[in-house]
Amino acid sequence: MTPSKISKRIVADKVEWINKMLEEIGALPMGSFETFVSDKRNIFAAESCLRRALEALMDLGRHILAKGFAKGVSEYKEIGRVLGQMGVLSTPATHKFKQLAGYRNRMVHFYHEITDEELYRICSNEITEIRELVDDLLAWLKSNPRFLDDTL
Image 1 (cartoon, rainbow, N blue to C red):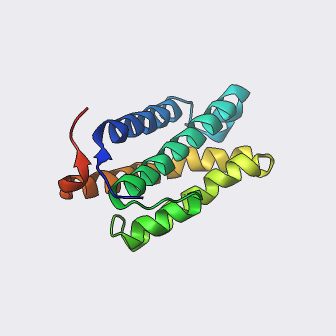
Image 2 (image 1 turned 90 degrees about the vertical axis):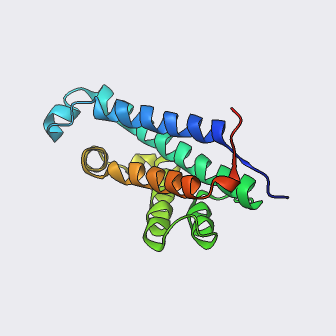
């Protein structure tokens, strides 16, 4: 695998998708747990949007590694570690990326263990961590324009 340019279009598409999913979560009634669970569709919508946002974040990290550094990473939990090794993410951001990858895996493989309370807590209090990681990746791309393919 040879390094090439990171597609600005793919970055924009992934960021747009993440933002869309987080906006959908934000549109849910998150004022209280009781309000959130009063309509079971809120739980299903929150779970789907959170999982999709996490998957798009992982795909964005994988794209940066594959194109910018010719690093193929197959496991989600490895993406953050390799992004840290390549200097794309700081140590705390690397740790957070790995945690979110683990949570995505849990959502997919151990979905039956995730409680409504846990999902509510994450969607109402911890969703900013996804935005912060997106901001970290975008800041790195902005400060390293030589890695970007500007063509859309």
